[in-house]
Image (cartoon, rainbow, N blue to C red):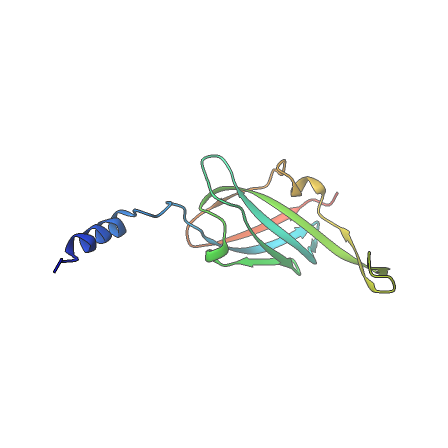
Length: 140
């Protein structure tokens, strides 16, 4: 009868040493996005690791100027480029493309396109725990 002790000891060493862990740590982020004085009605926010920070991008939805991304889906700790897309309703109805006769609210961009590219100059330093980030984007 073989004893499982070597496997148990090896597993315990790996857990204590962090073996199998990529070393990447996610963090929660929440905050606001405003263009000029107005909150972004609807949009998205994306965090892209830059510099020595590695890992996939993370993001969430902006609604009524607010976003809240839990740690399990949040950005990785370290420097991240922030990309933001935002729209607002015009008050007009337009026909949905590909669905004749179906009307939807017309929406127009409110965030300058530069903030949704790899050229965005918005950078956030994400720390472990919960981060409160507020973005004030100048009106174009």
